[in-house]
Length: 485
Ligand code: TXE
Image 1: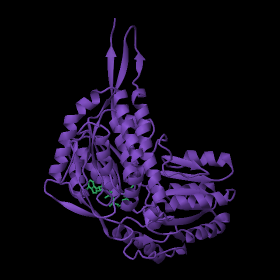
Image 2: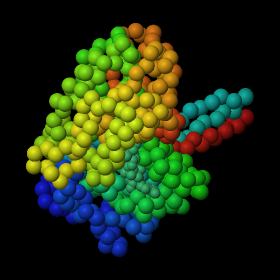
Image 3: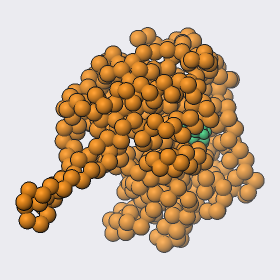
Image 4: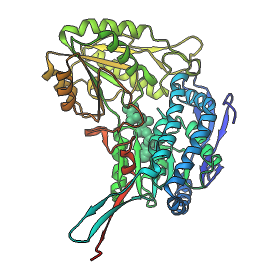
């Protein structure tokens, strides 16, 4: 496998083979740092999705009849190949998404770890036995759904893709994966690597295609038994509506507006460094980005000064040159982000750093936005309520714990939150009352490690990914009652 240097041709991966779309459709994949074409990728139409679902249905029974240990060994084999091709995969991910190479390398490391984590867990995922009256008892089996559909976004194709694909494979499902057309390259390569590692044909099919065509067809497909979706709120509602027509379970991860509560007794050096990273990681295009700060009034100005200084020092550039921050994914996303900034300014917010598009030297065609710090933000403004999905951090003031909590919980979302204080009682009280799937105390992690259950409350979605919990998400429990009397 060679590094992508020039325009590459990328095919669909269906039933163990790479092939063009049946209708021959292709779409250009752009380098977000330059606007130049990176690759021509096959664009799956409904008939290709049908093929992928049929291949998965045919392959799934034999895959599920392997012993858990055998499936685990397959996953370890994929992990080894991912590690062997780590440089290439990271380079591809960085080019395709625009993210700094160091972040792409971390994504590839996590990708390998997903295969290792679930490879190791495969033969340790048990059902239960329950004593009943007399000599009777019951036992539970954790059975795979069958064929699972995975609609994944462009911000972390490998990481988010594998977060859903690998536990599903582990328990014996076969997968049909629909990557986003903005960044389909790494996950398509992963599909080929999995075959090279010996995964049986049809067990993992990858069909990049447009959301409205391939995505919608997959979401509404009668041959899918479970759907996992990570993306925007409106699209998530469409996907869930399609699933409802088939009475089919879904796992939805729909982003957030994750708050960080910073109190006067916090370690501001640490908070500034970590919260800057929590925002600029992947140019703010992270579902769990720390995109809102709720600062205690007495520490607000000092925190803003520190953050503004840190933001001004952030280097922008092409991902593969490993700056602090790369471009956003597309011209449309840049315009959406700038639109939020303009709207905030019109509503009376101030700008403490950034506030505009950027043009790093030699990258005139790229989609860059300077890290932006918005102050004097009211809790009900759009920029404080909606997911901007770009490098924009809003800072709000709070008078005390209760008002900080009310602001933090006062959006439709609830994915991640953090609390910065040296008072452990306060930290734990707030952790219990924050409406979020994950809470970090004096730290912040974009979803944390693989072992930590991850997912949202409220409109951030439902279902838990990662950790041992994800295995339950991809199985159904069958209870068998035995009367031996
Ligand atoms: O997302 P979409 P978009 C949020 C973020 C961003 C906004 C819009 O706020 O600004 O969504 O981004 C597929 N049926 N997140 O438009 O459309 C699509 O092809 C089935 C948060 O890119 O949700 C892609 O594979 N599928 C987020 C996937 O859905 C459809 C990550 C996500 O794209 C479809 C990305 C349809 N009708 C965006 N339409 C996170 N939670 O990390 C599109 N898709």
